[in-house]
Length: 435
Ligand SMILES: *Cc1c(COP(=O)(O)O)cnc(C)c1O
Image (tube, rainbow, N blue to C red):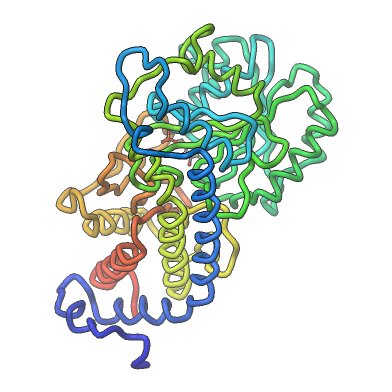
């Protein structure tokens, strides 16, 4: 044991029966070896912090923007200024940020319905979309109100074996004039594929626009915000969407979603958001927008904390012989860390241990269940302040082979590190790992 990597508080941790000395050791040795990676993550957070400050200053954000309105919400300054802040920060022509969008799925669904018309075809070029979108598209059946129910077709192109977009096939398939919108999902979501970088997305969008300048490109940006220097809205994409209880809400936004894009795409989306003719002019949020602004201001820091936690988990589990994705040395384009376990028992035990390490509902034991919108049973550990917020430390796993847990979030790195030490201690006790 090298003395310099241990804190003065070692005795405090080791007096806690839930932390095994070997788990404490592994986490601290790994942390010491990650200084360079952490430094790079912090540097990017500083860059985004500076960008955000500039945008807040430009729009003269002030206390009055935090006040809510009621009823129709005409002239709601907090709402309107927040749109401008997102527009400038994400480098789009226009933006909508609304608490009335209940989730990421909701804004993606609205985006698709906004851009597509009956007889059109939607083309997903990153394989199957996120699980909850299957019912939106009507991939398996024409569920009530799905795109398929509206006679909107669907095609998908799988990613190449190396995880990249199969751009040649995309260009071939795009010769079908009925294809009107292309969907790109940045994050791996609940799958074993890799997350696409903004550079990869940008190159694909350029090719798509070069062969068909009449198709819209929509990017599901969930989990990606502030993990790279740029966002997909800075490419030729028409619309990018994401959830506020993930990265850009900074752990403070209580609900909602955002969309950034071209004037044309946002105008179409506005009609979907409320109704044609009314669009963005209405919508009140009586409790006000303070947490949306403050959360966005905090977001680069919060995302950096979550990223450092993810990298630590990658390093620790890699060294224990588990397959992790991405590897701790790899560059990242979202906050998700997947860890492949050897059995469903280990997977469930991992998620339950994360729950016990949560600030909220630590006494609750999560079990696999048939969650709406998902094809398999899912177990979710989410002891969060904001219900279901996955910018807070959380772990999800569909109960199917390969037994992969998806770990994400963490309002503070210290919390993620503590949780990893507790999880390792449980795994040691249950005999899943030998150290
Ligand atoms: C979280 C997420 C969504 C939307 O999920 P909600 O739970 O509805 O917010 C969509 N796509 C990806 C890739 C996601 O990570």
